[in-house]
Length: 317
Image (cartoon, rainbow, N blue to C red; front, side, top):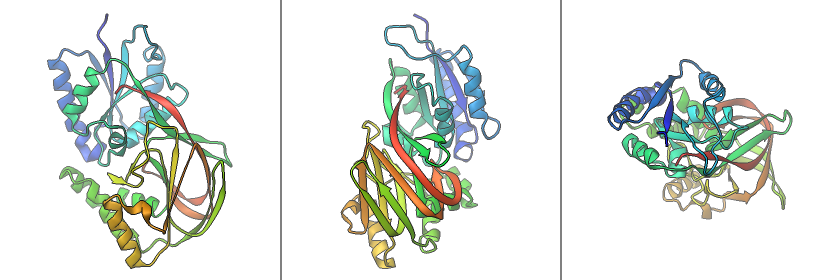
């Protein structure tokens, strides 16, 4: 049986340069272990998809049990890099993906149980003999029919504003270099919380339709984490087929501060100001223009009508 060849798709800029440092460590370990590998560096936005398309032409093949499997795509980068790769393989769910997290937030790694320590993640990857299915969210824009796969979450309102503020923060690069990347989200939250107005929302599940006049936060997810390790819904799991939706209504500052404290102790789900929906399919309509985000990518300020469900993709873990 031939050795598994790793095809490393590397974003050296992930985590404000952490990707480059961690690639050097991975390269050293693979050479020491005599593991065959090839490296593909991303050089510009969208390059991930081009690399994947090239590898689909004769290199990457679907995993079939009891048949030889020789070429494994491994992403070394942050959740944004992995998001692009997953969507490049949207119609190839049986082509496995390995992941070595090197970003600042790494919420997907937290959500599925991949170590955020590069050597531990690599050791586990090399010990795996077969892939396992992971549930990803599928978000469809109802008006355009555009569909994308989501690793972490889609947010409308305050969490999207926090993402935008953190992405443009001058302190983010410095905090990443100090291995305090999650603090960039905390800083962005503190500067955004009291600037976010309320907005109307309509939520439709397979069983009910509910309207909110004063929504403040709206996050759709299928694993617990957002914002660099905050467990927005501790009950969510990437190993089930459920979509989880959390809505927080606009409340007085003191009540909001208390809710945030409860959030960090994972006791926030009992708040009367928080509403939680869990279903196999959910539709979210925001008729008033708001900022949005998907896996940390800014969606701009607009109205939204999004339908969510889950779909499975194979991961080498």
